[in-house]
Length: 535
Image (tube, rainbow, N blue to C red; front, side, top):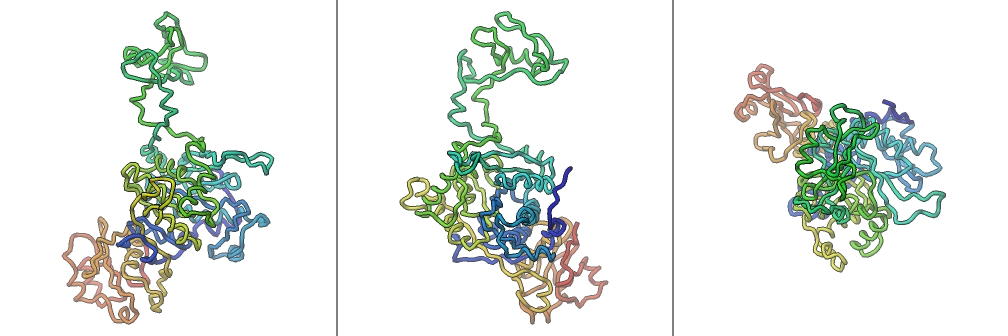
């Protein structure tokens, strides 16, 4: 498979692995809930690369649908490269605005996107898919990058969305569309969960019943297929006696036995006079919905002006956010790619359209989808979260009754705290809370989701897997860390042995190796031995 080469690629290919795990700090005053939780709807403010890494312990392999709307790299967006990669060349890029005069702007964009896409893939469930909005400036490079990260076999579609209602007269040929590029983590598994769209009134109106068929309205489709299959090359005689044989280069869609059954059931159509080329009937009452295709009109999925009006209807005036996406676009993606209990992630959250689409669709179909928004800009609270608050509680004076009523619901707001750096435990600096370090240790050691409900502080138990139990002796206090260790009394006071090997993380141990072996304990010293130790 062809690979994409760009300046800086060798330095960012594995950068996502070296990003420090950061604490997630709850912000009660900006949340809309009585009980802050990482299992609530989430809004996370902070650098989205660090935020994605911080979400891994709780959400790795659990997100069903990812939608992102990254910078299009038009040269007019004033985005800044901020990843502190260990490379002199990339360090020179830090903090500099990427504009049209920047000859390396395509390289910088790819260096920014690669580690984020790799972490997003880790967050996806096995049957999940990612949808990326983009335009012609980077669509071609994005496809190659996604091929490399997700695999070309997992390409789902390159959707063209008609985002305008009239052409742009400022250019030679006015662009009337953008793209939504989609890849699955595992195409076959995603395909098995793919959902059909609700049929429109126009689609329903195409079903007729000119022959008063007892099964109701129907549409007909071509009964031929491309290719030559000997068992599908037979003569068909219409009710009026006209004989048909498949046209050159084609065969009938089914073998003769199936055709005869369809004919007997009245599912074949030969025109009003019985002389027409055979066609197969499809009945309205048998259609589960409409199969999506790659051309989404603005009547179906909204457009740019609609998106701006939606923001104005919520805030009462235009905001500093100039390029929102319409709710209908995100809703269409959710209808295809999610079920009622799916987790939906948007790590370039912008004005918060994804959250509104999730909540409104839940209200419509009784779903329990949850959203995770990540926004690193200063408006994360004043625009992104504020939009979500107003959509939940209702907007008085809005033209839409549904918007006035509100969707109901909650969300928890988190900011990125200090990095969890093991050296800081030795110095007592930025010590994480017990729960935050437990999340980090459990996920790092096992690769599995940490469940706060499993934690038992009285026994130092932080969770278990099929073969292991994990314990952690820790308090975010340097004097405590200096004075405490795994002792013989602590070993004897552990819960009853259940047959699973025990991993005990502690600042030190005052127990001999023979005793550890007797009690089925593997000792891991904080902060040195936090690494992947379980297959």
